[in-house]
Image 1 (spheres, rainbow, N blue to C red):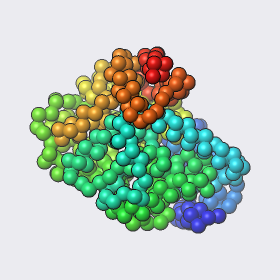
Image 2 (image 1 turned 30 degrees about the vertical axis):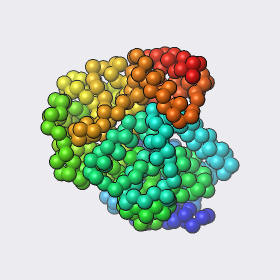
Image 3 (image 1 turned 45 degrees about the horizontal axis):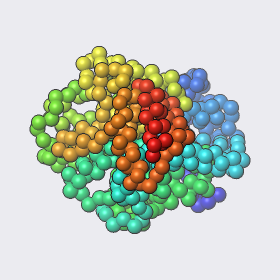
Image 4 (image 1 turned 90 degrees about the horizontal axis):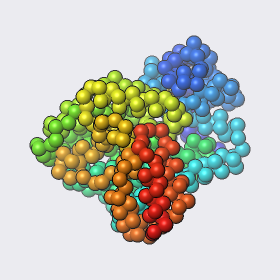
Amino acid sequence: MSAYADRLQALATAAADRCTGCGKCFEVCPTAREVGLEASEAKQRVAELSALTCGDAATADLETWLTACDGSARCSAACPEGINVRQWVTIAKLRATEAARPAEQNAINAAKRFRHMAQAVRLLASMQLPSETLRRILAPAEKRAADVLFYTGCNVLRTPHIVLNVMDILDALELDFDVVGGTAHCCGVYQFLEADLPTYERIGHRTFQRFGQSGASRVLTWCPTCTKNFGELEEDVEAPSFDLGHVSEFLAANLEALRSHFTPNQPKRRVVIHEHLGIGATVESIAALLRAVPNLELLDLPQDSGFSYACGGVAAKYKEREAAIHRGLAEAAVAAGADTIVTMYHSCHRAFAGAEAVYPIKVVNFTDVIAEALGRGGHPDYYSLYKKGGAMDEAVAAARRFLQSNGVEIDEASVRSLTAEIFNETGLAGRREAFAQAFADLARQG
Ligand code: SF4
Ligand code: SF4
């Protein structure tokens, strides 16, 4: 085992040592119930988890639990001993997968998932961002000199207006910051999930080290998965030289400074947040930011916010449950007289981006609202135009311009693959044919 693998194992062993076996973590686990594991067997499952941590093989039911986990963190919230059970389960799952499959197969699976993601992100970012912005984001982290790094991760570049909004907001705070992200700075999630630990160390672990090499005193994360993974698989393993936290928490901590820049003539809005628990204080932070926006009324609706820490990702395997959550929230919001659903993260934004085609409600990210309140923002949300399935002229004209600026060409095969990528995700959408047709024409015409 590498030194890093040893330290991970030490975290799991410490959890097993502290665990009293009460079973409360398993009792509240939403995905264990989703796959039919009985809450009454909680003590047995946790005993199996401890045994696996001490070197025993995983039982079939334990493997089912570990595989079902989508990282909701309800277990950690329920543990009377304060154990980070999500972290323990994540490490146990890595061990179980390492034991179940040859290392070569794990590396092949991880590389395939990474390549698939990287190709989609590269195309979507190249269709929506000018080359100078993309180059700024992709430049090596260790060469930056700013005191604060705004770390985007990879997948938010599918909806890059969010990145531009955050940059506008940080500019308004007159912060010495730089933006860093893209697949060259991946958090290594696919390698960790597929138990390819040697490659994870060369990707995710290395990205984290590069932040430290830049000399930044603070790294602001955007992606909930990066936030979770870097917090639990890096920061807890070895304390870094910088503070790490989600950008929404940083903005909420600087709310008074932001408020002083808000312009009073904001549109009258009744909004609902599409909530996900499980990543620090992001729900409370985003709610506090929105409440400070003039003329904005925040409605508090009961919702299934504890099922997953974000839409898609590891929760994507629960398509029906996710679809029910999306429909349920949109219908409840309309019934409550809300005019806007506010998304927290990029994957949730993609899931709701086409909602306007189905329900009489607008969908924006919280960064759209805050940037607009500061008199900034207003960056076009081209992804939402794709997803709504209406007129594509504006999105196609922008894509033609940006693809040319980035020196990237799309062909009809890549449009087919992007169409599947955008419209096969769980979420609300309009006509996929509108995107497929308009972008196939763009690919043919160049
Ligand atoms: S993180 Fe959520 S899904 Fe995973 S074991 Fe804990 S409660 Fe279950
Ligand atoms: S809730 Fe905490 S103490 Fe109880 S079984 Fe789970 S990890 Fe152990």
